[in-house]
Length: 465
Image (tube, one colour):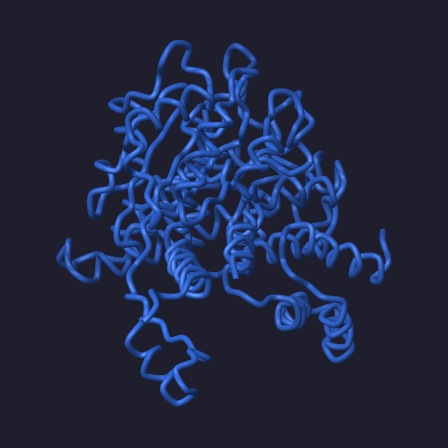
């Protein structure tokens, strides 16, 4: 049993490791808050911690998961579940094996009990039931670990919906507002039960294998620190909402660099007029104001299997950027290059666009393995008109060319023709120049930035200033 100080320091360290920004001062604030709450009241303790260390609503699920691991309601079978010797024996069939849950009277009794809890909405009783259910069905005979799947497969809470609706809608017309409200209520209670089961399983695994290891496996980083390579479809939808403000900021930074980098053409007439005050000597020169316009953007994206998840993010970024630039042309490559701008129709789904691109775009030359040199050469041969003095070039890829050619002179010529050029690399910087990586050689021509999550993308945009 760790001391309260050890649990506090371990909990704060776990929050930081999970990506939550918890400063030293905020950790001390949490300690001060603990002095004025009842430490035996977990809800008060949870609220005290949340008030001092959680800054964004998106961080709350991660906080709750870690809090339940570091400050569990109880430890061991003392959590309220029956001990192994007191648990009811599973019904055995003629062959000596447990009968399926649908035929087990004990399981059916448990399902009826669970249904009553869903009807009553008693959260404390539901929590106790989840603990007991994990103790009874969470571990397969002969296995040492715990799983939520065994509990949910045995009790099948989602199949109780029809009975729940029949119980509360007796004599009422079906399909109306009452049914919709009841269905939503029971759906929320079923989801709550599934969350309680998952929490209890994590608690028991933590007892067996250690809190730190369980925390690393159970907690996903917050969205802004989520590695693009591990994003699922739901994450992509959330990332799309976060990328739009970053795209606007990126466009504004490029416009500022353009405005500050070059002045307009010399205004000869105003300069001569001003020189009359100094005897015809042009002490002050005047320039015509530059015409404000959105910059043009060319995105060159590696679509090989090694960076396929990052390519999804690339499409997200391109979707967002097209609204901030006067012209956006997107190109994908593996060992050949093809334009994929046509897939960016208004309202198109990013995942569907990625599927279409993989099926229709001409990205493979011979092997279908990354060949940056040949891809750059194809781009320069077919699409050299995309690069103009007004263009900002954004390359997205890991710079791994399978030891093939690099076409550095062609890339240098492309960069010289652009207004700006930047390279976002999804690999950790420590892996650059290892194996077949040519990160430094490409980085000598194009400023290269590590970009694996939204935090690093925001940092890249800030550096443009």
